[in-house]
Length: 320
Ligand code: 0O3
Ligand code: SF4
Picture 1 (spheres, rainbow, N blue to C red):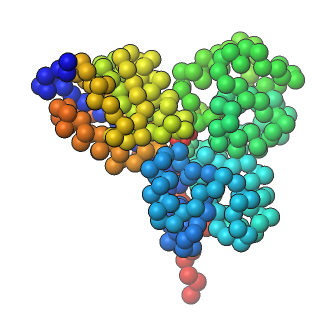
Picture 2 (spheres, helix red, strand yellow):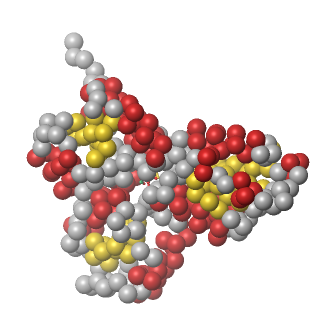
Picture 3 (cartoon, protein in one colour):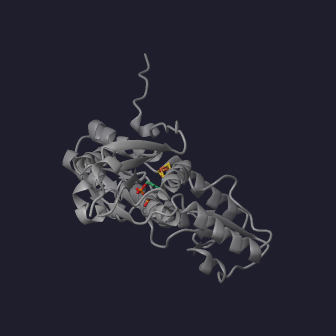
């Protein structure tokens, strides 16, 4: 039995949705289409969101998995998750015009990997094997990097010299889980070197902080995001850890099952860093139609981050 409409409310997480890196990457594809005309090839989903990919396909973007699938001499955009130097070389070999939409905060992790590898460290990259960002970062120094996926792997990973070990991480992991993994590594390698600043980016941390804040008060948390979006999936886990009775990942409002609302008074709502606002607005409309009209914003942080577009997308001033 549903609660009476009077008791129903929505706790809306803030920040949620697009981070600065995603906003920049989506703009790169839109501007690329404007400047170079369709088709513009994009290597890998520009961000892990079905709706974004479909919308850009409708505008003339062609998504491929490898640079080798792009016709010689065409324009290719690299996704926000970053690519290895080998992919840059493939693009150069095919004489592609490459536009790099890698988030600057992912590039920062690549540079840390290069620096630690140059100093001959064994680098333990905390992240999910097979994820595009982890593939790209590992490719900076494959002979130095070992992927460590959680505390259990941290307990057994082998290194050459226990005094020459550094850790880095994927940008979109659960902050708590990374802390737990690093704690195990520090126990084993007391001289473990850390990245100069957090690899888990501000947007991941803020979205997790907001959902953590509302999780305990929510009977159900809806996270808008696609199944291959690491940061979105983490929001479901963080909501459950924070005490939400249930949490579901949905691509859009039409995936909500009405039975999920049985006995639910408070719905928490958030969205991953790759999710456009329109999808959350649709969920809010759907919830309002089902009696959840009262919306309270739960604000964990304010964000003012903005990244400039890549140089080869910025019109150059004309010389006179
Ligand atoms: O890395 P993740 O699967 O979360 O990727 P999304 O969903 O595209 O979100 C943007 C994050 C990103 C590009 C890497 O940090
Ligand atoms: Fe960049 Fe963080 Fe957004 Fe990833 S989640 S694109 S690292 S700002």
